[in-house]
Picture 1 (cartoon, rainbow, N blue to C red):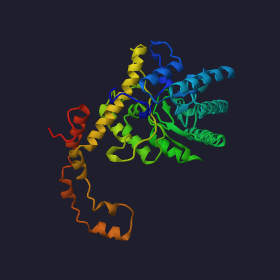
Picture 2: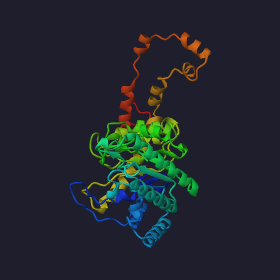
Picture 3: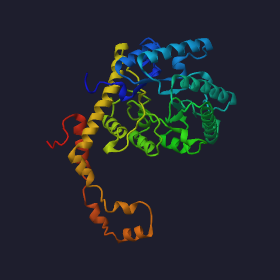
Picture 4: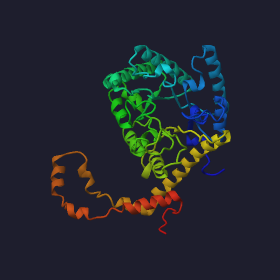
Length: 396
């Protein structure tokens, strides 16, 4: 076994909807047969994954009778026990059925909002039964094309009411779940409410139980709008709100591509892995590494499992390269020269004594500006680590 082959301890997860995607798109029919959830579970276990995540209707068909629902869940739980796989995260499909054409929690029709809330309660029960402790909300239909249809402030209030209700439900049932909200700027709506990780972080501060709610940033969703996934994740981590993460790849300005992790913009993928794994020895993200990506439409089922292994192997390869980069003596030296350690304490926490010392510092703006920072060299060293041409400490 290669050191880059995935093992459960890596905590890699996939959604039933990811490897189970049959390759259908807006311009073409499915190219692969639909895979049974138990089959997906077993194959992911063979690939070295830690767990599988799901929407309610990925496992239980929409409208299935209670007896059918219970049979399906019973069989799936047996397969979880057989394989040792887990379900760390669950979510609700509030976007496929026509009833959600104008949104779910934010729809103008109160009957739609009631139905969305009831469907979510059932789905939370399902997630709890399967052991999920993270519950993700992607508001795929929470938006508009004709903005005159509602005041966006009403939409935000309705979303808040729904989350406050669901937080109380989880507390009342003792499920011990946390919620993670997922941002996306557009698609399938013209514009989606709360379109960025930053806007969601503020929204969370307005909830009745903000401690229960965090974010689930996705590479594709940040990148398609030209934003930095690394910066979004860093802000979430700094706020202790990174409850879950969706890893994939994306080209800027394109539709939501959900490509294999690391297959586009390898530099950003490297920086993201470095951040998640604790760049420079800082705190790391301890949650599951979830791949919300889809195999190419060109693939048969064999290609599906190549895709899954590829996502996980690329992450582990980049993790090793990030550790080598941070341990590189030249990198350590370049970064150490950016700080003036005797000045730094003066910049944290105001006092009159610190103000006096700050004003007394011999700071010449022109002299400071003349100093080169060495970032070109730093970036080139990083590229050589990514490209595999530099061992830690090498200067050749």
